[in-house]
Image (cartoon, rainbow over all chains, first blue to last red; front, side):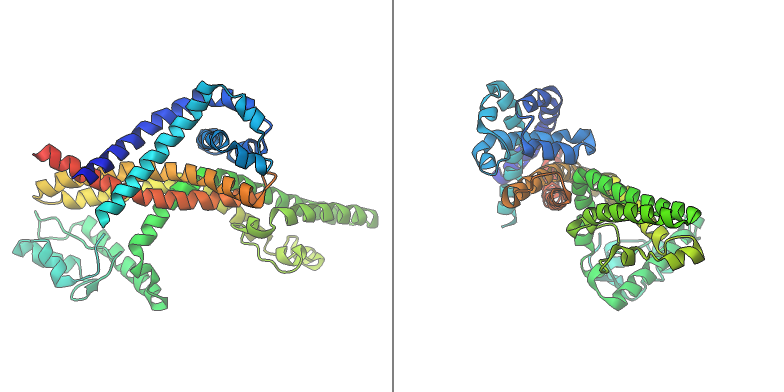
Length: 119
Length: 316
């Protein structure tokens, strides 16, 4: 019974992630991107997805979250500068990371409860 | 979607009345007394009339065509029949996932199409002039365009163009001065451009095709459950199939987005892709398709469980 509840909660969390993603990608993304506008990682993502749905903003949001979460790994491959990432204001960092983590959490919840239900 | 079952078992499971049973036999001559394979059309007639309606006649024709198509395919291999469910899921969720990155690939194919057209225009211009001075200029310009095309279709970037590596670009495109003098066009050129344009157009519609396929399957499942006097199954199907559709499409779309981002990120970190070339595009497409398929299937399963849970909660 509790597994079904976890699944249901994960589904609800996934539904919640959509307005969060849309809000972040239209209200905060441009401001956050300005701090790392010369990062090759962001430039490649922007170039590839510029003709995708919603101008590729959902993909760019996930790219920004990656930049904020693992800047040192990306700097090791010369894809971003840690100093640039540190200049991003805290509230903008939260706006980039939280929708991504909520989505990942809902996916993880769905996957784990589905595996446990199947077994 | 039905599993492989025998005709009498299938007929029995439908609990038809004696009159409808006779009509069922008439309508389903294509599967009568045989094993009903996944993908085959089973027609349940209008129970209010013993005569066949025009709609039923059309369905009989379609059912016969589907049977022939399935048998023709199974003569070569049983892959489609054995993996019908799997293929349907791959087509639906992968196309939604690919949609996340396909616009970029469609742009890449459009650029190849533009280069091919430029090569054709160059040949036409040269043939209209035909002087020795024009020949040198033509050769130089053509070499530059061939170099551009070579870069555009190197490695994985060739995917979707239908162009095969035949040593030189001239051979690949079927270009020879002789064919130009005789036919006034590059051999296979028209086919190539059409193929590239079609692939580009199809990629753009990936997401919509996926959503249409999933919505169609859901509508059919609900219609089947609500066919005759099965109110409980009908209500349950609305909850379960509705949940599968909403969460399947939603998850596939998220999976495609995340998969494409992870694909590019992984390729850039592992291979150190410096610019937005075809390599990064390929990673986005593969990541998008894999993410869309995996999360689409997971979301559909989750939606099914959530739908059942909600149905039981609403019933109690």
